Length: 427
Ligand SMILES: [Zn+2]
Image (cartoon, rainbow, N blue to C red; front, side, top):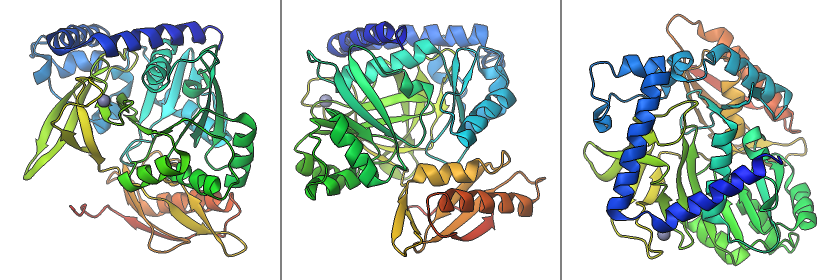
């Protein structure tokens, strides 16, 4: 932590400078230079990319063949530049999840399981330098510098090195488990008195209830919504109840993509990622992003096609930043599920908890879809490779979900497990 703090501070200053300085042609040149640099690095150090791009001109990086999560995972061992084997990384990440040991590392690298937008299992590797850059940049673009260290309360389903590293003179950081009962979270927040609360919108909603009921006395002057989509009506309510601005982070395994500015617009972090936008056929105004991370070298992310659907805002932001504004992130329509407590009341479960209970059941699950038709019930559709029998995997998923849900003092859930995912309904 002591070594991380100066590194975070250095990234904080650099990120602030880039935000204030990079404009127009200067930003274009900066991005071009870094994109070429990361492509050259990946070509030299990642056997997968060297093969994948064979016969293509690396200078024309915008036209290189794309990858997606499935391709990235299938070639994990040869894609990362540290020679980490997928089996080793997965074993570390799964053991950490199951044992609730929140410090999964392989050597100096942090290993994480993706809680991304689709059910595809994803693994990420982050070096200490990369996690300091992540933390420094988020802080540079969301915190207002003060004399005293800012107290930040960070609500996550599971802790990891990535988040633990945020400590020092700039910020005092405390982690709260998402599954902490709301009354306990409120008591802890009252004692900690954070200036800044980070958590999923659904959790922030519960805190707003507690604030309205007079139970939550902490008076944060800023909130940041992560991991789930922040709906406009939820944001409006949070801002009214807390009398504070509510920001939003758009990120995933693939790194930090966009952050809210002080004017409340979600800006693509143009100095961190180069995003190309592919129009959706027959859907004017909606695009799919292809992401090139300009910085991550441990697991280079280059021309990576995300499943998300974005609406871009053509108008410049009133904050003055030329960074592209995302009007809406669609396709991350996760909702809370409710299960029945022993006393007959219902208890909310966050999408990430359900997602992990399903994905951790078996490494064979390629994709899943979970829907709830009534409290206490869950319908789960699983996509498996053709050579894997369905019944044993379904039993594993059933057992894992039951253990997870009853582990929070709820009755065993009514589960329907189906083979194969029906095609999505387009809104
Ligand atoms: Zn702005």
